[in-house]
Length: 233
Image (cartoon, rainbow, N blue to C red; front, side):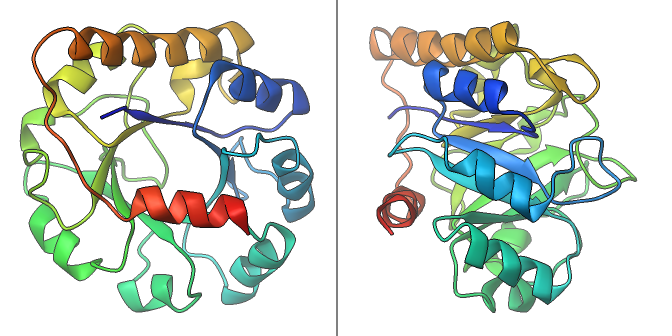
């Protein structure tokens, strides 16, 4: 198993290029106007053109209008959708596109119930609880998470990750993938090219260490196929 890397909240050509060079599997664009990382449909489409052949553009929405999602799908045909609000499973699956559903974690979050409710999702992206939408930039109690393979979908870990703790996170959770935004920034909303490179290197080092140590638990998921399908369209 290799831990997939998603870098989110990109806004410039230079930082997208840094993601490409660092070996990110997916690059996220935020389509939520209150966020300092917000980009327009046109911006996201232009930036997505600079991704590598095997890298997936992901667009993050928060309780979006249906027309906005359809505009994004038309502008970025290979897009992987990410819903980070209070969207229902029926809303998410109406677009007939692979999607991720974000779950904000707290002590009483029933992740198994969410897994059943969003059975059509390719993965659940677990993030720290925040009253506001979007990440808090803080970690949460990883012991709340099930063991690999216990959910219907792949698990993507988010929330307060950075180059210093992502290796520990991988060893503790063995997620399918990790997702980071503020952890690769020099200031709020400002991506740092060096931090992008160091974060990806830390994930790769953790995977390499695991391969030379104890065998990692495996996760099988349709997300592998959906990434392949989306990049080949």
